[in-house]
Length: 128
Image (cartoon, rainbow, N blue to C red; front, top):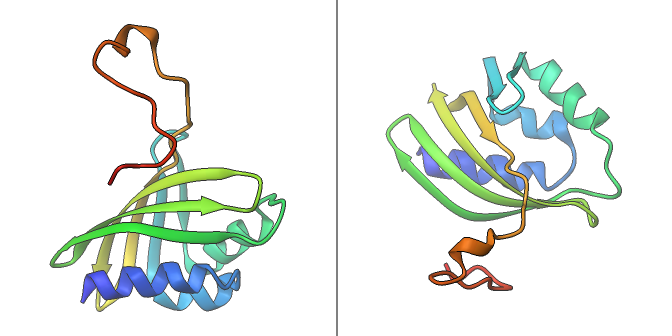
């Protein structure tokens, strides 16, 4: 059930109607971004935060994978507004069939270090 809930949430996010997407969030929803140590509580704050985010166009979300185990799930999603191209890793905790918590990582892209060239190759498209 958690895998479907997460997939449905990301599909709803693709509508760019964040009020609609918040229907997949528990009324006690909490959101945390460890890299910046920012914490948010409540569906209405989730809606306002996403609506205010400075975007260059409509957001699209391409789910790469969802792994779930009971009330816990992890999603790997490509996110773009047409200019930004991000990858977001989200740890979800569910309660009552809705998303109670999200811990989300938005890693920055960076050039591959020179020292790894002996073993690694830079590819244009993810191999898996």
